[in-house]
Length: 367
Image 1 (tube, rainbow, N blue to C red):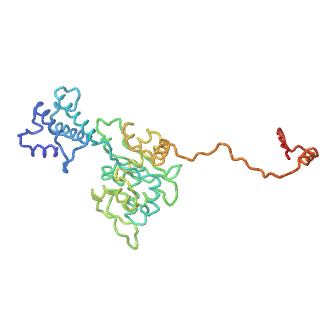
Image 2: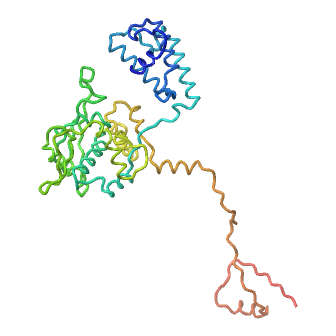
Image 3: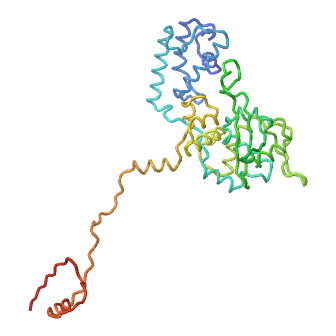
């Protein structure tokens, strides 16, 4: 809405308040807005951004009690001209190359994950190192969203339990983007996941148990790490990690590990979906982990591995220009000797066993 208000303030015409516009006025001025809206650097918005901006304006109308002006509804004939103009605008932007390449967060693949362990970005030698480890694996194992689910996370949502298969982490989700818990979601369940981890120096159950114990197993899950003391190696304070700090966790982790790519907090959830997809896990189980409610949404998180992309590239590459070679192996030359013919015949007739089979012999007797 701020973008529309700034555009409205910079025009010399007296444009009415958006929520008070008539249908004709809204159709006209929205058309002008779509054609003229620019970023701060004066570059044009990609088509998807324009659509999302329009969705924000529509939400603003509904929040202010205006329900009869759904300009994105194809069945609303009063805004037909506006939708045609917006459609033509988006197509022209595609022709100019805007929005042709979708920028997405990269997943952290197993080889990169191993690098983070080898470079001691992950571990439990310090409170910060342990916190980064727990943050990443909370994303990867339980499919938590990049910021909002982490910001509201509480220690009480994690418990360390044990069954016949061994110890495991039990996670109980709460309200999320896809689950609000109201009347409309009575048939939708929040996340209720358990994760068994193999014993060893990278056992996630041990890491989460140590982290939760340092927090007293209660309160906010992400708190400011404190310097170690002689008595305690892992110390976490009462101050909650700030918003900007929390949003930069994955970026900090990958920079410390020297990883190259577009890594954001959203990379954690994408890592969860991608690694499950690479190992043949069903879409239903992936959705249960990530919290998506439809297959179309979870498929956006799937990414081909680097090895798959390399194999596809090799298949589609032109044939290699290899040097031509004879199909028949080269014949071995036999050193010729001047042996009298009668000696050869005598050797063959006096032999007690067959030396040659199905062979033709040509003798050339000359002077």
